[in-house]
Length: 296
Picture 1 (tube, rainbow, N blue to C red):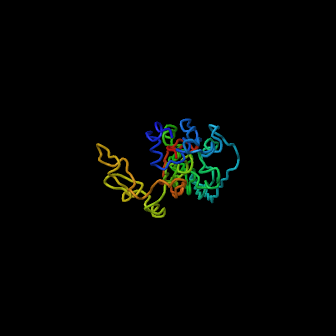
Picture 2: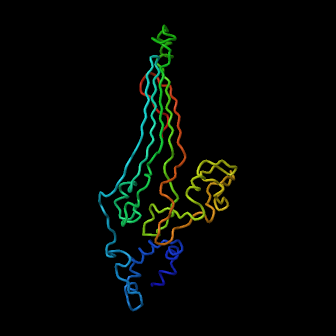
Picture 3: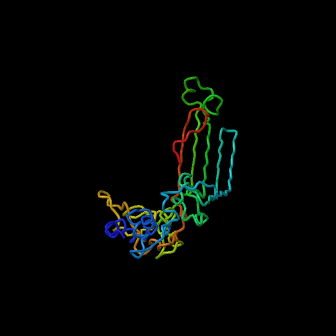
């Protein structure tokens, strides 16, 4: 089969080595270098033209349909209070879950194999949405400082003092939220030519045990989000001036590429990244709207 462009091709050999059978089948289906030998009975193959794909004469097929499903369930709590002394506050808490079988960007979902594991079973993509945020708490408050005309202190001050101390408010906003979803992808086309949503294959550790090793781990060599006990620091890189690790690799034997014709068993979007926290404090002039000094 076109020896000059196959077994001497680095890409061809890498696909075999890495279990990228989907990418390799795609090449065999559409690359003209393999077409004649693939279909010829004289050389012993005699494979039908549609052996790898339904219609090899179509370079691509876009499917535009409305067959996706998603849901969002949440509990929302809000507390608001305004006091007579110029103090008011509001606190909101949301506990939610967003799920679906097509939760990527709309443009991605228009392609037949970009975001689907397989068109034969679209519901197999049902997973946690990448925009899901399980918990979110936001509280804000504003307090009109008691200085100046009509206030408790310096109410009889002259115009000059009033311009200096009067009309000020103090406000704050506190935001806390759980992290965004992530997972360990195989990056392999073990089932079709796409790699989207194909998780890694857990081999030397269960998902439950791997999840227990996710968090913030501060060590002399750096801060890690995965327990350093699961990492091989020597296979990563180290900052030349700080001596701290800038990258690392999972130890051998924990995960692998899925077998050809299968999907990985690492749950897609099952883990959550680091929590987010932000605190803003402002001292605006007047009792207008509170302005944030940071963004989420």
